[in-house]
Picture 1 (cartoon, rainbow, N blue to C red):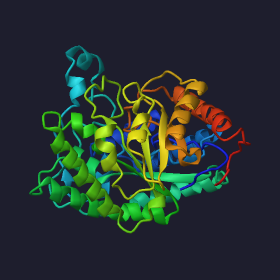
Picture 2: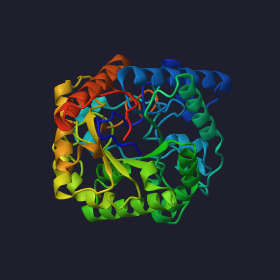
Picture 3: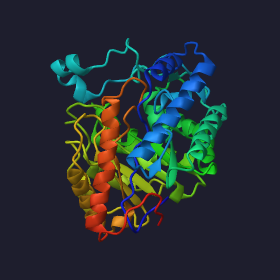
Picture 4: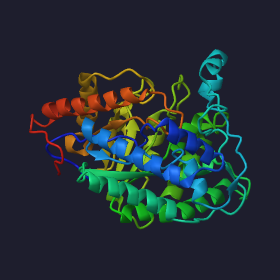
Length: 397
């Protein structure tokens, strides 16, 4: 993975706004309804071109395809793996159900045009890898758009769901134990991980299970049980990543990409040492939202492995406030000073902006304004931390 000695590089967590037409088709696809394949392909191509161009325009250094080809950050696996059908009955996050008036105010109406992540498909048979074709098409399309634009990024990445979030959110009705299920998912996802790296992309594994499940499926259970669940899922992730170079893999961990109280979130201090057991070369953590803005201090108490990069979430994707560049720079500087080496720190977002089709909370124009501020703040941080060295797109190590 790219690190720079001359500037703070910018990236983001993956998902970017989809067009209304693409949302409508992907919602239908998520519900296993018929979709015109040619029309979907055209909309995905147009969407990918649009978000790649916009990332270039706002100055993103390490970009992706915005997940335009996927209905959500994890339910897309139902089209690539065997064994899924029916509907899960996933618990709603406890911080939402704790406040009845908030529940009335904010709970999404899933009858509207949006992917229902609470009622994702469940495992009803043996989970195995079925086909690489959708991923091959996604990677080839992204590469085609990059070539059209003469490679607008210094580096590119592609996201993939972790075994743990699939197993936690797409509930098990087939395997004898959770451990058996998550290992089966890890085996099934391994070809996807390897293929992404083989195409020259950095693999970003999305692992909200390692934090969010504490106030979801483990809301009424002891902390120790949740921590054992974290260890199990990190082990399953390592199984799926087996043989891949760690410097080609980054891991994203968060407490759920939704606006709510988050007052029941497990503290980062409780899980961070366990996260360091993952066979990756970088970790992306949220330090922008009000509940976790203080947790850069956890990096002092639990220093990251010396060869890891830290992708600091300095932009909140759940609010339409646009962070001031000075605020962004302050957030970057705190993390860099804590780590002790600004070349190990990248500037990113807490999570994605459209993690499931139709569920984005930030207006599209505001998304790009926030990412513009991300770039401006990274430039300010560069001047502070790296002696005002020249900033230019495409700068390498």
